Length: 141
Image (tube, rainbow, N blue to C red; front, top):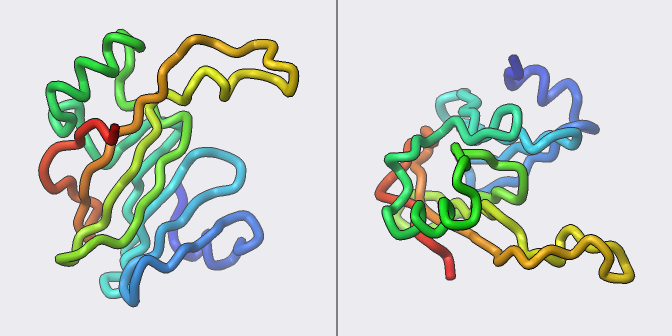
């Protein structure tokens, strides 16, 4: 289990991105694991662990977004194998952008070999300073 002392004592392996004066977004260089570090409560809230989102449930995904995801990836169950990023938003909330499935070019080499016909699927939603979902995640585009 990762705690804040592990992060602070291994700064070369963890990136901290200050979102504001009370929250940092923390990522680990060897995985997709990430956390929200609340500097006021001294709490590290996990967002992704072992390439799976742990801060939300399927019920936190809008029906249209979930239908779109399931049309491309029927067995998807909160996998976060690609980009998940947190940004400061207004009203004390933090916006999460989550690439559920990258564009098929993601898989291609420099000559285009390996490219798939996958369409990019990005969802976005909001969390509070304790990494609790506020509202539903919706399709980004």
